[in-house]
Length: 137
Image (cartoon, rainbow, N blue to C red; front, side):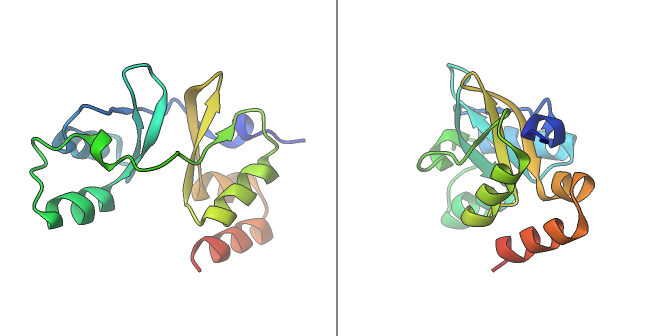
């Protein structure tokens, strides 16, 4: 059985819930990523922030990215998987929720991210194709 921890990208960096969106954008640029987990002061995951969220939900709405904090865009309960879940369970979560990346949790703390790219690198072409198709519907 292949576990999520065997496929995920480890060492994901968080943006703090009180950090400004400009800091998040700078982190995304430096890390060359399009999304960051939002972590609270307690180190626990509060949500996910994408580059699209910054543009569409903040800048286009007239919010100042220098004064708007990342936590303001963390809505609802984050979709996550456990590091010890079978990879098929993680793929199903991605398909069901139509998301391209999912935070991976162990002991209530972020330990990595599983993305479409991780699926493509570690699973067969058929699984990858089905996943991309279901996410993109």
